[in-house]
Length: 236
Image (tube, rainbow, N blue to C red; front, side, top):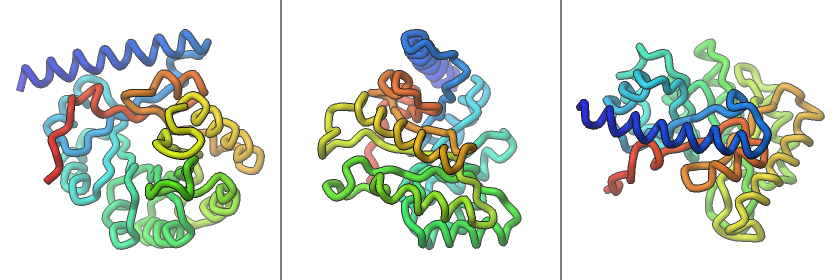
């Protein structure tokens, strides 16, 4: 396990260098950007080593993998982010361990999250997932025009806290291959959102391949998996 810890330490240092360099290039302070390590498909032992190396935020996208892992690592005091498409039948489980759900994209999900958060006495952070390629991709997310209504719903829902916006760089549509422009568009949408909800200032964008563009655009959080943990095993 020492070899694996060394591997993670080296990879984490490289990612840290990339984020720092991107912040310098953008004229930003390093502390303005939070690294979230996406640990999906990797074991709890990796999460534990990452925590020892200073990681405080981890993300998962499948509840069936995340729930037992979060339980095994409950003593670490980490912030858990759920970043995958969330079905309402998984809400009870996810609210049990997630501190932030980054993939809120429909009213029915808001209602379910609020009901469970209130039942358990928790306050759950929520990001509106924005689909900049809405209508041309099958991925989750709300079209930019739907952000305001959904944000108002989250902000008024018991047990929920509206934290901001999230997106994934589009593979189709007008922003395909144009990550910088896509993340810039998300920042514009964040500015609009903060006029009505000033505290919703979190902007989650950028992954292993495009974190520099996200930092340049103004993202507050980047979600990095492969660059820290390596190429993931295929899911069977």
